[in-house]
Image 1 (cartoon, rainbow, N blue to C red):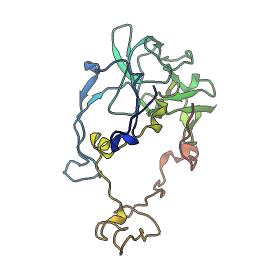
Image 2 (cartoon, helix red, strand yellow):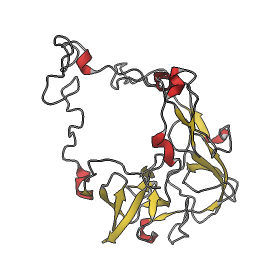
Image 3 (cartoon, rainbow, N blue to C red):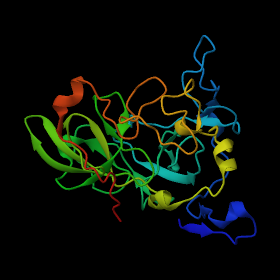
Amino acid sequence: MGIKKHKPTTPGLRNRKTSDFSEVTKRNPEKSLTKAVSRSGGRNNQGRITMRRRGGGCKRKYRVVDFKRDKFDLEAEVLAIEYDPNRNARIALVKYPDGEKRYIIWPAKLKVKDKIISASESRTSIKPGNSMKLTYVPMGTLIHNIELNPGRGAVLVRSAGAWAQLMAKEKGTAQIRLASGEIRLVKEQCRVTVGQVGLGEYSSLSKGKAGRNRWVGRRPKVRGVAMNPVDHPHGGGEGKAGQGNPHPVSPWGVPAKGGKTRRKKRSDKYIIKRRTKGGRRSRK
């Protein structure tokens, strides 16, 4: 689990930094936990592009990850840690006593042959990979895979190196501090997983060339100021003209480059403190 630098024998390798994959112990995925993925190329059911700069890329198989952790009070053994092409975090293959296998998001410091458990209505040991309700999690614990609705599965804090911290509990809700600095209310009946998501050095990796973006299905991006006025509000002008628009916008007039787009969401009442301007903070 380290960063691999390359000799600059080509321009694409000069600035490239990749993972050394030392934490990965198994190459091929578990066949019973994979399924086919069909790509849309950014188009809707009418064939119109609704998401720009999508298309191409290598074929993938989707790994079915268990975000609900609903196999309660059974110790599972970690069989392997695997690469997942559908997310930036690694996944861990676990096996339960009845023979069932499942994938989970790999927490940092979880090793092969370790035992993990998902407790139903009690507290379990505070070690990476164990899952329980927020009611039973001690204050100050680092957590990930956070549910927003009990039983619906984890939706928050799932990417590589991500973490959140339990700050307080009051009247059936818990205050969670996210890595961005945002403090949010979550129901105590929601399930979380102990620990920080593995591969914390992901933010230090560098693709090195545009071709690696094409491999994952990302097409080139053209700046608005480089277009004609008919194509973009920032386009046109003589020579190297700036955007000209005092409020940077998308081609359809939506605020861009950091403009606020959140409008009267029902979840606003659950946000106690907005994220800090500096964005995500690392935690080693």
